[in-house]
Image (cartoon, rainbow, N blue to C red; front, side):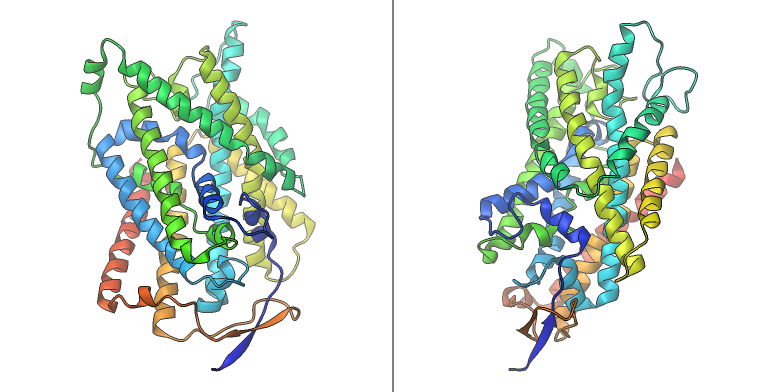
Length: 458
C-alpha cells in the first residue's frame, strides 16, 4: 500500500488557547464523561441570559422547534468534522488542510476568528447590561438620576453609554495580558454562575406558577410566531462548537465513541437551553419591563438580593472570559493575514484597539445584543457550520485525499495516503446524502438571508 509522509508542526497560538478550554490537560487522555462535560461547558454559556426573552417574545413552541432543528443540523455537520479527524492530527484546521487544502483551512480560520471577534463584542455588551443594574441600585440610594438601560444615546445623566466609557479602560487593560493561562483556568469556574442561574430560573418559574393570577398570565404567553430570524440566529450561535471541536475531542480515550459523545453533549445542551428558555419565559410572565429588557436579569427590580447575587456571579464570569475571545480571534485572523510571519507588536496593539473601539461604538449606539448574537451565529458561522463540513465529506467520499505538508521539517511520521475509516457513513447512497446536505444548506442559507432582511427592515 502506497505511503506518504506528513510533516507536523506545533499547534498554532490560537489552537493552543482553544485546547485550554478542555477540562483536561492537552497531553492527557480523557474519558467520555470528561469529553461530554468539556463540550457542554464550552457550548452553554452567557447566551442563556437572553434565551427566556427569546422564547417569550417569539413563541415557546416555535422557538422549541427551531432549537431542535438547528441542534440536529449542527450536530450532523459537527459530526462530519470529527469523523475525518485522525488520531495524530493537531486540530480541526489541519484536518481541513489535509482534505480540502490550505485555502480552505485559512478561510475556516479567518471565519472562526471573525466569529469569536464578535463574540467578544457580545460579552462587552453583556458586561455592561449585567453591571448597569448593580450600579443604578447604588445610585438610587444617593438620589442620583440615571437613564433606562434601553435608552439610546443619553449623556445628560448616568446612562449605559457613560458606563461603557467608564469600563472601557479597565477592560482594555485585560487585553494587554500576554499569558492568559490563569484567566482561562478562572473562566472554567464560570460553571458556578451557570449553575446558580439554573437554580434561579427554576425558582422564578415555581414562584410565578404559584401566583394567584397565573391563569391570566398564561393566556398572554406567545406560543407561535412566524418571526424566525432572532431565535434561529441565536440558536445558530448557541450550538456553535465547530471551530473548537477538534481540540475538545482529540484526547477522548475511546475515539470510536466520538460521535456518540458529541450527540449526548448536544442533547444535554439542548435540554439546558429548553429548560432555561421555557421555564425562564414563564418565570417572567406579567413583568412590566419585559419589552425594554435585553437580558432576563433586566426584568427584575435592582434591589432584589437574588438578582444582585446572580449578576455578580455572571459579571465575574463575563469579565474573565472577555479577553479570551479577543486573544483567540487576534491570533486566528493575524495567522491568516501574516501566514508564517510573526506580526509586528504594533499590529497586535492595533488589533486590540480596533476591537475595543468597535465594542464601545456598538454599546454607545445601544444596538440590541440579541441582534448582534443572531448576526454572528447565522452569518459569521455559515462557512464553519455548513460549507466546510459538507464540502469536506463530499471531497473525501469522491476522491482519494492528497496529503499535504502540515508544518515544519521536524517530527516527520509516515501515514497512509487515505482518510479515516468511515464505511458506515459512505454506505449511504449518494443521492440520499446529497438530498440531506441540500436540506441542511437550505436551512443555513435561509437563516443567513433573514438576518440581513431583519437588519435592513429595521
